[in-house]
Structure formats: structure tokens, C-alpha cells
Image (cartoon, rainbow, N blue to C red; front, side, top):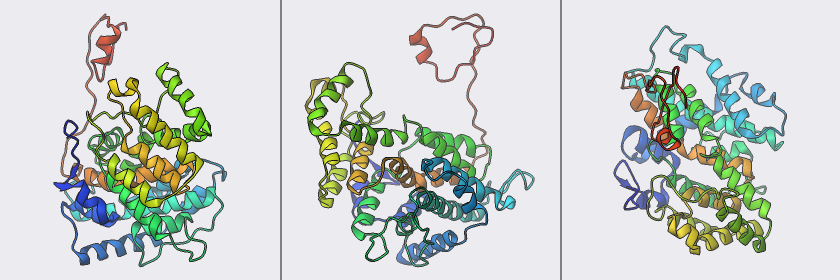
Length: 379
């Protein structure tokens, strides 16, 4: 509810889920409509780990074919394509038409495989880019712990993910686990309406999400913060934004007409981490000045939870190119829930073509039309 600043998932208040719910809990809630029992959660966790250890031949080679300095998202997409190519029997068109539509047992198996594959390709892409040894998933590990393990983000003393970092990421992920018909979700649903497999749909969502006006904005914001360098240069950035010379990523939200209700929880995560760095000081100073400046106040522009997600990943010492990867991973349970629901529908989604011969439009009129195809017309 953007007017009142309320966030619920399947009727569950976000403040209740934020405290101690893990990735498996969120998957269960979104996909199957309720929080799991301890045995259900344990079974799902083991299913993820087992699937993540079953890496098809060619996936690793597809990712390692890229130069190591390639940004991770293209490698992740290539890895998911390699997963698709490893078993054509999971592709509806190859199998003659339908596999998943109204076949919920196959849908659920596909969701587990897709989410496991996603963690694997993130791990392979990250370890390749940063020249770390790839460690296979722990059969007893959680989805998030195994993701960090495969990425090589571990405590050098124990060889395992830092439990404080795991908790901070999980709480951050709860804040952005789903957000309705976002651009990436809509892209996924367009693909799903053709009855495509879940990997194809996830690829569509990631491709849309990496744009600089969606999850890619988190990487851009990180680089802007890094480029400022010191707190004393923040006022110049704010002045530049007010003159319309550049965009302040992470400010404002298409849904919330009040303060983003998720920000208070994100601030608590930052406080709990107790991290100190000049980069984080710059980020906080941007928010401090912008939150008290009439330019932003009059336009109802305040920091959103995605920007605070950037702050959190700065505190956890993640490089900028991995922030959108981690933020998109948080959205994956919601995406799979949307895909599952799409597999019970038979509606092919298409854009509407509106035809006005020899029509002329002003810029204001054009903005009012979502999809316009002009034939023999002028704009």
C-alpha cells in the first residue's frame, strides 16, 4: 500500500518476516502460499543443495569462456543458457508443446532446479571474475550460505560464510523479496505467457533487471558514491542533481507516496553491522543532505530501500558490480511464484497496437499512451 507505506507478503507483515526468516521460508511463502514447517524447510533446503551440486557439463565452461574481467551478469546469463541446453526435455517447444502448464508437480521441480541453477551460476561467475576457487555447495547448507560459499565470500579462517554477513543479507533480502509488477517481473510474465520454461523466464527478468533504471541502478549508485570520494564533495553532487545535470539514483519510488517503509529496517541492519568506512560515510552524507533539502522534500523524494541495500553491501565489502546480482537474487522467490501462477493461466500477453492514420501527437499525449504502433502516421 504505497499511500500508507505498508508492505505485506501473502498477508504476512514484513516486520515479522524481517526478523529471522530465511531464503527457504520466503520461497515457501511465495510459491506455496504459507510459511513452512521445520521439516518442510529442511526438505527444501536439502533439495536446493542437492540440485546445486548436480552441475551439468558445459555450464562451467560456458562461464569460463569469458575473460575474467567481464562483469558478472553476462556470465550469469550464459551459465543459465548452458543449463537450458543441458537437458532439452525440459524445454516445452522441443518436447512438442506443453510441459508445465497445469502440471504443478513439474512446475515445482522446475522451480527448485532453477533457483539452484541460479545460485550455481552466480557462484561460478563470481569465482571466475575474482579468480577464486569454486567450492561446491554444502549438502547441509542453506541456499544463501551455499551461494556465498560458491562465490568465495567466506571467512578466511573457517572457509565458511560469516554468520553475521549471512544474517544481514537475509534480512536485506526480505525487504525486497517481491514488489509486484515491476519491470523485471513484467518481462518474466510476458515470457511465461508463452508457456516457456522457468530458466527462460528468469533470463528475461535478469536481462530487464540489469538496466540502469532498475536493479542496475544499485551498481550505478555505488559507482557514483565511490566516484565522489570524500564527504566534503557531497554538496557539489547535490547541487549538480538540482541543476538537472545528473540523476540521484535510489531516490524516490514509483509506489510509495510516503517514506519507503522498508528503509527503517535497512537502517537497523547498517547499525547492527557497525561498519566504518569513508565510502559508507559518503553514502550517509548524501542521504543526510538530500533528506533535509527542500528540493527533494517538495518533490517527495527520499531514499528508497534499494539505495540502502547499496549501503549495506558497501558495508559488507561487496564490489559494485555484484550489488545488482545480489539484489536480483533476493527477488528470485517472488519471480518463481509469479511463474508458477502463470502456469495455471493460458493467456498470451501481448502489447496493444493503437492505430491512428496520419495522426499527430504532442509530447504530453505520447506519454499517456503505453504502447503505440504508428502505421503511415507521424509523431
